[in-house]
Image 1 (cartoon, chains in turn purple, orange):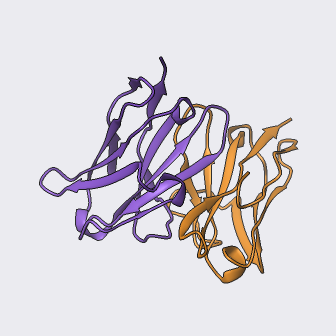
Image 2 (cartoon, chains in turn cyan, orange):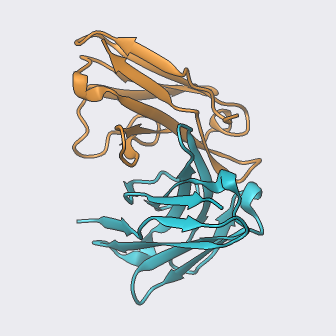
Amino acid sequence: QVQVVQSGAEVKKPGASVKVSCKVSGYNFNNFGIGWVRQAPGQGLEWLGWINSYNGNTNYAQKFQGRVTMTTDTSTTTVYMELSSLRFDDTAVYYCARAHAAWGPGDYWGQGTLVTVSS
Amino acid sequence: QSVLTQPPSVSGAPGQRVTISCTGSRSNIGAGYDVHWYQQLPGTAPKLLIYSNGIRPSGVPDRFSGSKSGPSASLAITGLQAEDEADYHCQSYDRSLSAWVFGGGTKVTVL
């Protein structure tokens, strides 16, 4: 069965970086990409980007260009999302979701990782 | 400000039918991109409920149905049940932004 498991909660200071991991199993890693979506407290869903697990090609949301980096480790079937220059309004739950194509949908989601930016 | 527009809330009595609209534009839904719907129970991750406008993944009850027409889509829940209380999000792809775009989410309350 498909499993998507994310790393634990993080607390970071403004200006720092955070790296969230997303370990997947139960399917052929190279056949599906991973999308990243965040949800600020009480807010809707916001897309950060998508990475092709086969070749590492990425598609980032314009809003996060220059601040977000997505990478894969095929040996451990893990995908990483690093967000730099953190601001208070980056506080959110970050989700990864398996997505066959760059345009979605996300069919299996991780449990979410709470990232809190606090001084 | 979400790219796709959903009503903030809808409500209905058990057994009733409710619908949630999702309105986009010529650069996303109106351009022919599929619409997907997610159900998010309180305190949990979103779950894919409907994909490609009207297809239910395995295990999703047939009380849930989706449709699309022009730049809009809708999700219908028939025979509303208490366990359907959740937030529902629509999602599509926007060719101008080259991005997944979401609606702001709709909270469904079972009276």
